[in-house]
Every structure is written in C-alpha cells, then in structure tokens.
Length: 270
Length: 215
Image 1 (cartoon, each protein chain N blue to C red):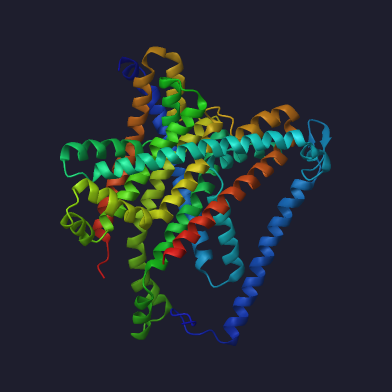
Image 2: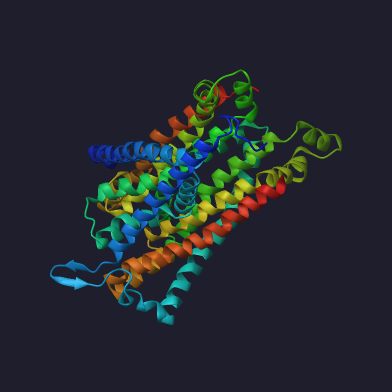
C-alpha cells in the first residue's frame, strides 16, 4: 500500500505546497550550516592577536606528521582493547546472571536479582572510580571491570527476557528427553535465547564501545584522552578544534559500522 | 559511616546539582526530541533527512565527546558560559535523539489497521490522530521514555569530569579528604543514585504492565 492512510491522497495544490515547504526548509538548514562554517572560518581576535580561522592550513598541518597518526592509532587500539576485553567479560557475566536469575531456587534467584538491579542502577563512572580507588587496579582494569559489571548486568537482563519469551514446549521437550534442568537450560534454551536477542546484544555492545570514552575521566589513555589531552597539550590549543573533528570522525566511523552490523543482524533474522 | 553522616550537607548539595542537571536537561531533551520526532515522521523530505542525520550523528557520538565539545571546544570558538550550563547543553543534545527514537517507535508501533479503521469510519486526519493513534502511541511511549530518563540520571555523572561538582564530584572530594572512609563515601554516592533510578525503574515496569494494549 503506497497511499498514506491518515489523509487523502494529496492533489496538485497540496503537492505543490509541500514541495515549497520542503525547499524553504532545505534553504534554512543550508543557510544555518553556511553561517556556522563562515563563523568558524573567519579569523578571530584573541587578546589583541589575530588568529587564523578554523579551516586555515596552520590549524591542520600537524596531521601531515606520521607521528601524530601513530599516537592516534595507539589511542584507537587502546579503546578497542578495553572494549574487546570488556565484551568477553560482559558475555560471560551476562550468561551467568541470566542462568542464575532463572534458577528454580529462590536462594539463588533473589540475591542475583538484587546484585543485578544494584549494578544496573549505578552510573558506570562511579563503578570505575570505585574499582580504581578501592581495588587500585590501574586505569585499564578500572575501565574494563566497570564496563564489564555494568553491561554484564544489562546483557543478563536481555538474555533473561529472551529465555522468558521462548515457547514453553522447548523446555518441556528437553526435560522429556531426559535432560536435566541445567542441561535443558544450557543446551536447549540458552542458545535460542542468545540468537533471538543477538541484535539487542550487539546494540548494547555499541553502547559499551562508546562508554570506553569514560576512560578520559579515569585517566586511561584511550582515543579521546590521547587526542584531546596529550596531543592538544603538546601541540597547543590552536589545534584543539581540528583534533576534536578528527576524533569525532573516527568514533563515528567505528560506531556507524557496528550499528549497521546490528541492523543487518536484525534484518537477517526476519 | 560517620564520615558520611558528618558530610551529609555536602552530599545533599551534590544531590541537588545532580537533580538540577537531570530535570533541566530532561525537559530540554523532551522538547528537542519531540521536535526531531515530528520532523522525522513529517512528509517534508528535507526536514526528514535533517532529523535522521541529527539522530544518527548524536547517537553514535560518546557522551564524553559531546560534553568535551561543550566544555573545551566551544570556549575556543568563542562561547563562554558557566560549566554547569555547558553540561546541561551537552546532556540535552545527547539525550534528545534517544527521546526522538522512543517517540517515533511508539507512533510506528500503532498498527496501520488502527488508522485504516479510523479512516473507514469517516474520521478526518485530526480526529483519527487525536482519538485513535495518539492515545495508543502515548501508552507505548511512556515506559521507554522513563528508561531514557533513567539513563540520563546515570549520564549526569559524566559532567563530573567537566568541572561540574555534582554527586560524583562531591564523592571524589570527600574521598580525598577522608582516606579511611573511601568505601563508605562511594557507597553513599551509589545510594543517592539508586534513590532516583530504582523508583523510576519500578514505575516503568508497573506502567508497562498496566498500560499494555491488549490486541
């Protein structure tokens, strides 16, 4: 069905009007963008000194230096390393939480629920600080463990929702084949729940990757700390804007790829 | 425990700043998010594309980078504001696409048959939207919106890295002053967050059960 449901098919007059509105809106958006670019490109006065605009070559020349890219590469690697280790931890913890929380013993189920709710209700940053200060593990493990615990609790909840949504016959079939309850859960139910929830899990892993940027605050040398702290301190404030733009582009590149992967997974399943 | 009780006024001050961040950026994000969602479902294609790009761009940028842009890059460009305002602007911008997506999925979640039924009964555009679509979409949108607000509550903590002394900032200062009671102080900070997030979570769960539309 191609015609809109909520209103009658537009006639020539309405179509013309909506075309005009569309063009006017586009013009406004472009005008605002041009205005921003012009402001950024204009040379600026700062305490009597005239500085070049933000697109001047003298604000971007450090990017011809391979050493800068070397630093940025190390930052990206550190981000990916923290995210990778945390992801492994998250999947393990998620499986553990989900199976303990669906246990038939209340002695196991209730404490698990409490721990999980506690972890989910706290800011990740607080957890990282806690680990950093109390366990004094160093910044890398503070980031990894903080992200691991927090996202593990969330993935556990996602997997539990997957387990609950399975048809009851799956479990009954497993039990009637003579499998024990634990075998049924790990061999029959969990694999299906995992597949069912895979797109949501990948989306959560994208969130995890974004959250490694909290390493900036707990002084782990990930991408943002490398560019916005070390490099901008070394080369001076006038490169702050260019370094920010480069950092943003790198993050967008990585995250958009992962998000596209999550969407592809979701589509493939249907 | 004594260190916590002795510094209760400071904790409450931090809690006040956190709540202030939450409420102001929450309202701001609701306003901007609604505008973006309206653009996203509007038939005007240029607004549509703009809203889609805005959503994708902000959703895939880490919050730290957004706040860093507000606190460090904007002053270099020539905008000078108090750091609290920068934090509010950053949190509002970061949260708005999540609000927009929650609203959009609620409206898209109303089955097309509902609209068709309304139209075939002879209701006009305004009538079918206000009497049939909106009441159903509203019910579906409330629990996800509460979840967005819970996430915002936790996200306000990132502002502590950008010169805003809220709960975490207070916790860090107090932990430096009372080296022997670090665990108690950080746990107290956690409790203050849970005071906001757990009731909101329970509310969302209850509403989800209560408002669900049986079809």
